[in-house]
Image 1: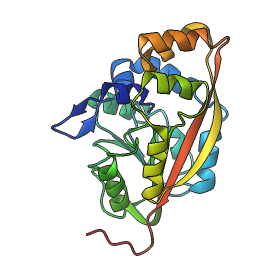
Image 2 (image 1 turned 180 degrees about the vertical axis):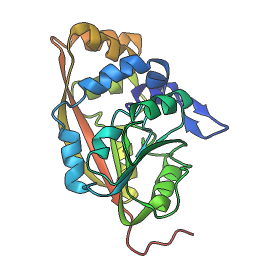
Image 3 (image 1 turned 90 degrees about the vertical axis):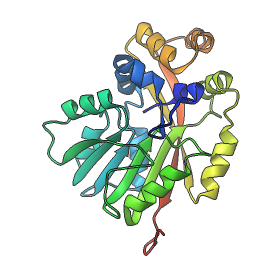
Image 4 (image 1 turned 180 degrees about the horizontal axis):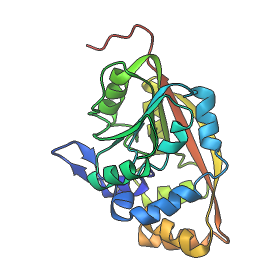
Length: 249
């Protein structure tokens, strides 16, 4: 789930340690439009498959939201588990995957997954929770549930790339993409950058999506600076593997 507005809100549900995600929590229908527009050629998942092929594997999707990406994993994986903290989205995801064998959705968080130790091969988080400093508990939890040799794949937005990254930095002046990269590097992650397109069916859909991702001023600026219905957006893929024989104490 894309969480630009999550950083802006800075809203934590202290009782569960969950970071609120105002865009999809408040506007799930618009977020569904956004998901359909993002990377229709599949560049992000092609890069992910090169780093961590999930064929015949057990996959966890952290921050799975309404389950948009679960069927894609299910087409090749042995099992897929969506983890989502927001109950209405848990219900929506369960409805989406109810006819898919081997796919389940559980209420939980990145830092507290209801999954046994060393039981999955890939933990995937797409623009959810893992935004650099402060996400250490989620990294430790991913290492707990991964089998030795398993992979934690964190996909976030590259705020250094124009134009989307320019709007992000204007909307989130305290967000420092360099410090995020430094954090992930220090935690042992490999980095890969992926250029994509977001393709919208019309300007009205583009405007709705910009409106849930940015504050009003930057959303209006982004719309003015986008002449058509396509955006260029760069992602970062951060990869960390659980070493064979790693013991967590």
